[in-house]
Length: 492
Image (cartoon, rainbow, N blue to C red; front, side, top):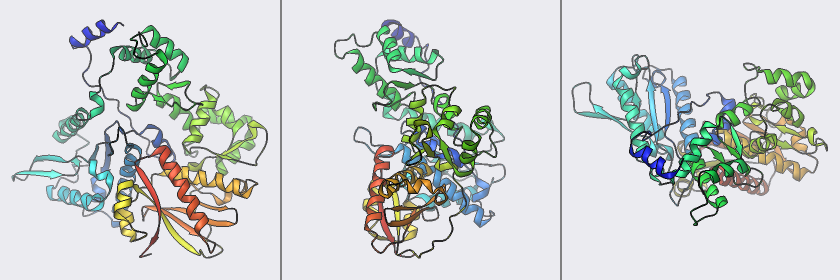
């Protein structure tokens, strides 16, 4: 469609002024590593919680679990949306929604919940982007302000607060700079063509052919390849497509992230006691030993992965993306043939705790991940655990990647793939590893908001240095707005 026709179409108001795509993220822990693939700074996030679990009558243990759950989601959103773009930091807008207002109808109770949220999260950088709800006080006073939107989920749009929440979301989007960026109408024409093609992905070569047909590269300011690269960066930043200019991925343009990524990834990252898809049945019949090792040990052979993904196409690109985001971690020293390569799938490893350490740790430290500015400003080398709990960020996707890098380094330093061979020392949120002769254990400490590191040798320098470097690598690749550092607890 020529630019003048596109312009006339929009001047006549035939196009929507604002279109929002709504994603409902899976709540199962197995899917948490996928968050880093789909969460972006260019979005607004709705985080829901059950008000009954935070009310004054709630069981204290259940209340603490609900707070930890909220902390996890706030951290996940912040870690994935705090990328520094055009020299600006900050995270995406967050709207907290409290459900079951029909059962927690008291104004005083709702205000107490709001005060609790503020006390718990005010020191978290994620809380800086939480939107406030303002309304006339139902008890007859002036106006009240809450840190969440209390909704009656039995009423839907009949609840005025639901309507107010939707209005807030639109206001947040309209206030963002990224929707005000001007782009050529020919880009929109290309986008319309991509949306109508019905494919989950397209090659860069095919995309350039479409772009040339729509007039890209004809202005004289840029050649076709340069303008296509610029368009892809813009559309990918908005989350409309996924594109990576890395050499092994630059020929792939993902048009439907759910169809192209989540569908194949969820075949290996799921609860196998609940899910048994046709691909599972087929693959297990072809490679029964590999299948048994996969679901019992969390070790996935490449030939089994090929069979599971044979209907999706782009196997090498999918494999690379999965490894790049820590969804699978390559093992070394398990076989020379390409199809005999094996991977660990961290999120489906056993949830059972590792046995107690045989030797008492010689050094205990905490690896803290937090907003870079907060880390530099708020913490010294010796910290109070409560301070870490309030500012620490520990989304499971980052933890999986860190453990994966530590496993790979342990294999290299051991020379024989030792860490990978003994998968009994690996858990979903815990691992007993070694860098050469330097033995240590890492474990997620959600109560403290960080990663606990028990080092079993007298000199902890090698472990501390290596883990710090690996942590920086993970954050630079996936969450550049975050930083990490080793700290010693002052109070246990």
